[in-house]
Length: 318
Image (cartoon, rainbow, N blue to C red; front, side, top):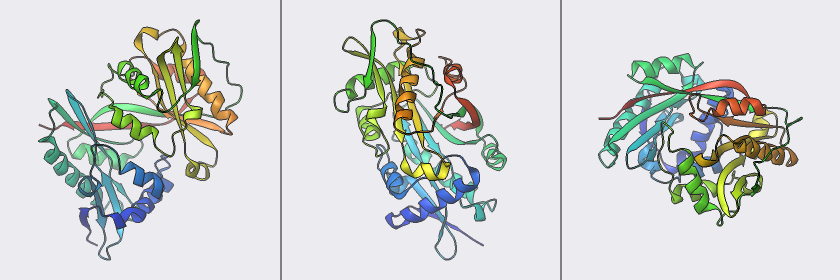
């Protein structure tokens, strides 16, 4: 049966959510979403859903696949990110490759408008998704990085945070902490292999998300100066799907002059205790296995364990 690849339309929103959730019900990769969450995702900076999102439809015009081309752009390097998602009943019929080809073409179109000297096309999947891995490799993409997905469960018997002398921790205050948080993020991740400076527009977009929980997030202060942060999200629609109340640790960042003093683990433990008090039964996060700050070892010491591993495939766009 033939399919058509076309640009996204507003009326596709519900159908795309259903495809994503049907795929996640099989893959179990915590990628499921809701109409509200996907609508918010489509409103991100540097993104045009009508040109950067594609759907695959069958002969009856039903949506059976979807893919987004998201962009993280900076002065020195930029990255396009994607992963084609196809309904389980329609897999291994060439739809994933058709979507990937359309994404690659769109990335080339957008590359002409970017000032970065280096631009990369990245696609991700779990390492155990062997069919997708084979697709990426046949497309000329190379494995770039591995990122463990980790869980801390249950949130019992957590150690008490031990803050370095003179450092205080309090909840994140939107509007008050944004500028210092931006500085902390960019200083903390400057040596990351995919580093692109976070902009205030992107930070405000992210903290305005319905899933962001400022009251469960924390900033560390040396006097009045923010020197570290831990930002958490909670999504009610995940609870039923996961079978438990889970909070996600999106960002843990410590400015380099304050590293190697136990501040990262103290911030993380403070947030885990806050999540537990809020009724969470577990916490999840993603990390980079080659993180220069050895973040994975920190997470394991606190109580996280690896569940599966993401792999990022990529190639440079000339």
